[in-house]
Length: 139
Image (cartoon, rainbow, N blue to C red):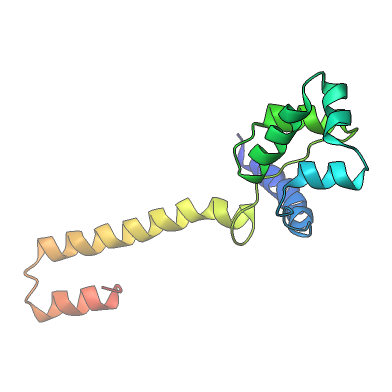
């Protein structure tokens, strides 16, 4: 992807990340059960719309609470309750732009480290000038 389009995409996604961070954490029983209860629906009612058993809805809710549910199942159950599924990938810290810059920072650090190693191999490491040069470079 071209650099300018990549930067545009990063800024667009970062706006969405800010919105996602304002959302509350997932309820302890999961979103499916919480939404169903808030809507006043029973497991049997949701199951009827999906043409599955009430036990299947219970299993879906349990699987979601334990992080074992598929996106397809979440979509199906949410749709049966008249809802949409929305998910987002959010960096643990900072923005996506910050996270995207990490490989560049790592390459620069590696480049600096390999430069220091090369200097130490090309000269006698016990000579004062080499020690000063390595110390100056951050070794």
